[in-house]
Length: 342
Image (cartoon, rainbow, N blue to C red; front, side):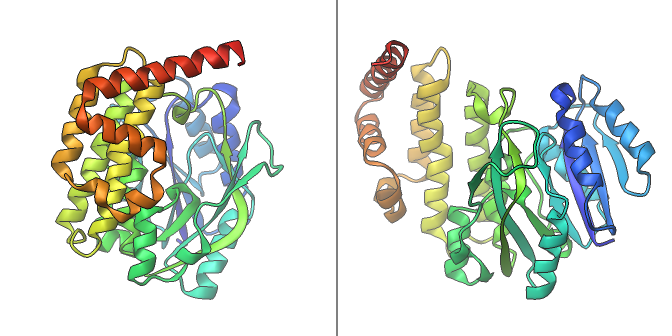
């Protein structure tokens, strides 16, 4: 088997999302592949739809299911355990791909002897194959034979894991997997996985369609999501320690942890979470300073964190209460101005 495509599925029937995704998968221009769809304890008709596709495409389709929801990381791990393909691909069950997506990625792999291949993607707001807003998933200076400098760049910006294919043998040999039961599993796994691959190539076309819709999990902030991001960052750091990467890539790992665990979580919580609590911000602060007390001296932090955020973090370092009140007031003023269209 050339390729295994793993599709984690949870409550995606509404709006024809699951069906549109699966139709794009069964109509690929390659023939030597399998689709492993993992129903993650859906409460709608998702499993029923998957079984219909398995009945229609028995040579392509395999359906697995969870009794308990394990989120996307758990569903991907279940799929990986059953996959037989030489290559592994993932797709979110509300997105879709061009008919020649896997043909082009596999061809690039064969031409270059790469063990990881990706492409760009585009943002779309309805179910169409017309190209929308194109987004670069990885930069070309990350591609080619992966030396230390390119691995550093991939730690910093590993790109989305669903917009790539991976050599299965490397996944197996290095026991690579996803954290389960949390959001942001790719934020943890992506940088760690990238360090085991030796040659990364890109097809410079937007072959993946990333569907923007109201029920998408990335479009709203909850306290649980903030906590999950912190957990994902902590697992990432532990994985780097356990796998012996921390000393070699300390600055990059420190910054990636800082960005994921602390900066992104802090400001998304303050901007989007309801019923914000001072105690949450204090615990976040303590966790960051405990992990990396000198993170503000990191060269990437100095270059890449914007000035307003650095000023606010400096205020937080001095006083959690002052930060909480001051930034909370800023958020309130922004919302009022937006409402009044000032």
